[in-house]
Image 1: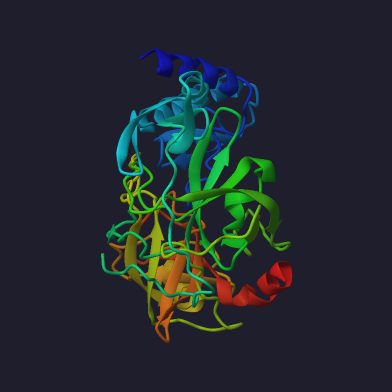
Image 2: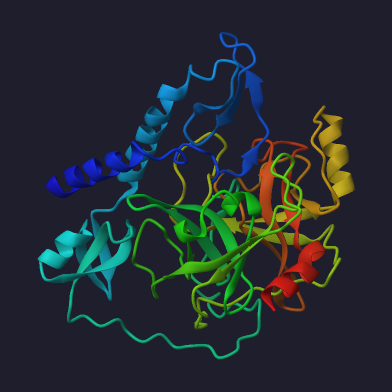
Length: 391
């Protein structure tokens, strides 16, 4: 198709100049490093997403410079395969096309084809979106639409997790949902620091009210906003993921709807160990696979105290440190877990009938492995900091 050919050419121009596209910033971090035999001293990072080795450092720095473009090409190929050819808007199917092509056809480009204005849903200009009932000052943590992969999980119902946010990273010709987050009030979203620390604020957007990232047939459309301000916790350490938390201020206040409501924050220092909690995201449903689910996934896990989690890790020879500002969630036998692509997403527990934010997906060793539960940023340790920043 001519439109996609033009799109390929435009993106290839962009990949020739970008260096961030091959970075595994959107993965739930996996401590899996080794030294390649034919290049002593080179440390590589095994990326489950693309089954490729990404160079982190080398004693032969010139050896891998020419591979950057190759990694970008792989990203482009995967991105193009994920783009839909059609979309649904106000109950009618329309075609996806290059945004400028929509304009030349006398139509209006709408961001429903996962490509922003570069690859948009072309709808007639006279079609007006229907009015969605607003929810005035809702109670946090309450879902109004329960009637309706995460490893070992299942599809969430539309609107069941109305605080779920999708963190979108974009450049002029490239955009991708890279992490999750949680809406905590009208203008702030909380996520993992490693998701956004290295990305310019102008290249970040937050999508709210999303359910199926591969289709546009939801009952109500999602809403996507620019980020006005990014605040990474000053103690964040990318080498061990301590204080892995960041706040994003939205460009404008959110208008709450039945599928767009904030989650409750815990009390400072509150402990949820031993309780059941739910983690949600659009990450991989199995470690090492490339494809992600379109529909938001959820899975119920048991919250594990950091000291007990540390004992599990050490019992099988792992040396990672589980700090008191972290909390684990999973099962000793494995089988259920968050995974690559779920980073920054919410781990919530029900308290007094409301969902409360327990943790943010941070890192793990593989996914759903015995005695290696996922590690989360313990949100109750940062309530004072959150309130100070968002005041």
